Length: 427
Image (cartoon, rainbow, N blue to C red; front, side):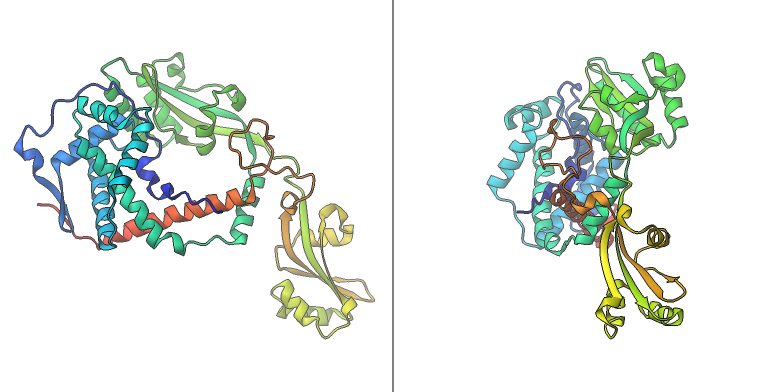
């Protein structure tokens, strides 16, 4: 059964959060009546200054991006739009759904709901802020299931293309990193996190990151702009490797919290090698033998695909047309050289003086996709150390990844449409 990870539809809200106590208590909010005044109206609802303040503090506790008034306001507007769409669709969360959502969220920090609510209270955050956050995710997930999931399809061609991309991408063996470590003494964790998030938002190049490192980093590498030597990936902590493998060179990581500090990494470069067999190809091609070059040119003109070529040759003797799929090394050298310069569905004419061959390349594929017996294929057991590093992912796992990505993209597109059609105004 296909694994549908609908959580991807709300990944922007929940991904990467970590519940961390001890950021320092805030004074109680809403001591002033002005805190409850609307800041922005969304359709028939309103977002108040108090809610924005609460969201900022909530995100601080989660050590998550968005712990600033501008981001919090945008997130609350999106929450209103999600809830509005769900309400229009008749979606109402049950008490059991809400309780399960609260328990699952609190468990990420190894806390019960009551313990997490107590932690929130110590930092000036109401339980209602927590519940509103979770409920918005629940109703949006149900809405996406009803309105989006059924419209998403993944074709075999898309899976083939993704598998090909995986095969042709070098496996990272070394990384060039720059580090920035911000001290976060007890009671100053929130300030350190805020600084780290500002650095992330304002870093657009290695030079930007280096300048911040020289100014704020508390390590000897600071004078070098945080630069570390090229490092084998295997030498880095296992918990850090997945983060780095998801990054693109020239980008900075999200803030990482460690004991007494907040850490940022800038990925300068990666080095690696292709997996064994990645450069080998299998060619699906057709050969049509004809009497003259003119006849070959005419058929080439009316044949856009190998299937077209088959139709065009249907009136000729059956032995004139052959189609086969072979590894490059098994194709006769003369034909292999001609096919080497062709893209899929392109043709070339080979004139031997007494006969003419029309060659058409139907498809060029990595040999590792040909399901050869010696081609390693990974199981779907993530993190299994016994699986060789050069194995290919399970095809169905790749299909699920594409599926979940398309669901997430479709959900975000729907949200953008809701935003465009909404009446959003300020008092």
